Image: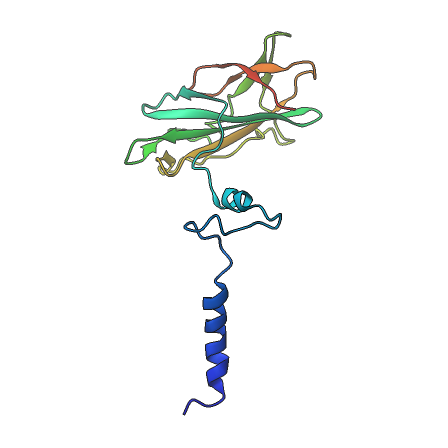
Amino acid sequence: MIGPLFPALVLPIVILLHFGCGGVSPSDPAGSTSEAGSPTAAVTTATFASKPERLAVAAYAVNGVDVELLDISRTGADTITVQWQYRTELTPSVRLDAGDDPYGLTRDAYLYDSAHEKKYMVVEDDSGRPVTSIHIDDGRLTVSPDAPLTAWAKFPAPPTDVEQVAIHLPGVELFESVALSQ
């Protein structure tokens, strides 16, 4: 006794099997096309990078941890944003020590403009708190190969004619002559 419900139950299954779920098959990238009709565009869309692009790398104060400088750019007429990441290849995870300060990994960062011999400290909000990422060290502030920790901070922008700066991040050697992206 199949009755009238049979087509209603079977039809969605047949449609799903026939058309699939719309994803790109890794085994058939040549047969896939993007809206632009380019087979390579579909493959590019389906590919994910394991690590973001990095500008520079330096060893961190905690053994086995590196700091990768990811981005420095003008994010407003008067602001620079710097983004970096703590990474390790060690297992198990490595604990970072930010102390009791949720801004411990970011508060003391600064930019140095050698052309004008000026240091630019982290911007503070109206309450005097740093405009940075917050990392609460509750004993679980760790990095592992598959779980890096990203941090960022905002700084006053140097004059527009400044094309590069040095970047100081707590626990890391100075990143020298880093180009500012516009």
